[in-house]
Length: 344
Image (cartoon, rainbow, N blue to C red; front, side, top):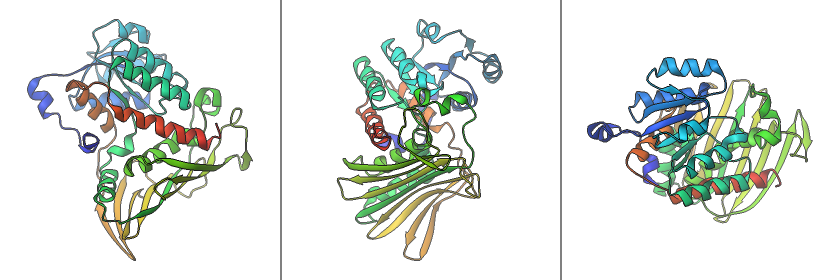
């Protein structure tokens, strides 16, 4: 997917003065950030905003005064919009995405696209039937550090990649109650953080077939087996790929990690290794490093203003007239792995 490795370039759009008209459903911190980045890159015209929290709406309108506030998603869909950016609680992602797609609009949704494999499949099928572009905010793909890692792996210079180590420990936990209700969230730290890790591994390795998944899930230090009633705050998973590669995943909320976050995706091959990882416990600053035995070469380092970049790329693709892309099937493949981690 070379288009996903290209950083946003709005010059062609600006020269043609073509911008998709976009609605934003949910403009809390993340939704407003994505809106502002798209506006700042002139990648889309922010036409409609909707949020159930008045303060969120007010803050969004201050950032983009030309936008119009509407009461509900249905109000956006009757207007002349090209796409909708969805940043609502996870329980609504699938239903709202399908509603937008069936109205003939493109969708860019926060992760997870669905609370489980079935919901994710339904959204992707709706996009296929509507022939509309479907994007998910898998934001780490679009960091310069992860793109450098991807390019090293794709070059083949690592030889046979036999192991991948994935980590996302968040020393904090979500502050919204719905995150802790599996019926609303679909799960805990795995579906919140692990979704990024699984996506990065499979994407970088060209989505090989997954043969076997085993996992151990914990809540407040105790192993859990009933994921229908309890969300996990710590998880380990072992993912065996048909290629022979072994993927080890570890993620958590509220872990006493000694820093705010530990985030990494490390690929080991017979000819060396390459790593994407955060530095100094940051949620935002990442490096790419190439490993040669005992020697490390830095490939990329901060600064990198990557926040919201995935949305800009999606908006550029909408502006270019792109319709449904088979790459949406990747969302289904990631969801299938998450379901296996949860034993569903």
